[in-house]
Image (spheres, rainbow, N blue to C red):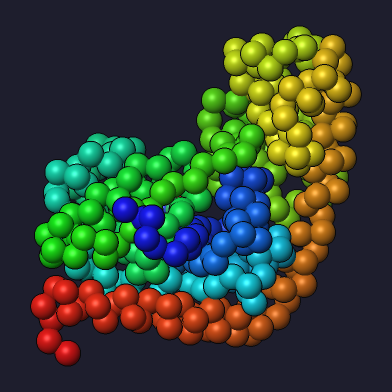
Length: 337
Ligand code: TRP
């Protein structure tokens, strides 16, 4: 179905404080590579952020921080469109129309809602429930064909495909929306906690030692890796042996991702080494890669007006890209204009 549509990449990240290594390796770094090959639209999804309780001041600050992280990592606002979701009304408008296309049964199957709501379903916002529909609108307002996401968002991209297909069928417009494809790549798309190799690295983990923040200085990074949980064995020879050693697997994956090598190639270099030796090399590598990003982020954040200007500029381009799609959507649905 997406065959006849021009390739376009769309992705988004929620504005949260404490951006960490998982956000960088799992998302931003892959986006950077796609930028060389495709037209890309990268969004700071502030409307998704208000589906749970939030502090307005912190939201604005986090929106600027995520924008700074995109740019500091090398996403170029001249090449790619960078903007915050709430500045482009098409997202909310298309989300409403998609709310009327998606079925309650489809949303009831979304595992992330179930996880986030837990036993408190009834007390959650309606927005949290319909969150994946807004995500479908994000993607399809631009007729995006490729969506780089983490593992946990794959089901949401599949829902976007279902919504696209049902819209096309229901309104008799066979090729109107493409079927967007999730792109899940890289050796460290799932960066795990430094304290528990079976839990995802997360900004909400109470222990700051569980994650490397993008703005951590060299000493902090070295300390956190030094304290990172490991097992008592030296590093194995073969990648398969990592399967039963989640902490070792995580550290090797992080190294492999930054060194742009396969995990086996990293093991070839470090097999038989003690963790203390490997952790030293890992800290050095991570510091070398992250410190230029951290200092560029600090420079950008010192001038919030400039960040806001970049976002307004990006929003203008985003509106222009979505406008023809939305004009057709309104006509197809039967809205008089
Ligand atoms: N839900 C995504 C996440 O939490 C963020 C997101 C919102 C997104 N809209 C999107 C990702 C559209 C890809 C495409 O990671």
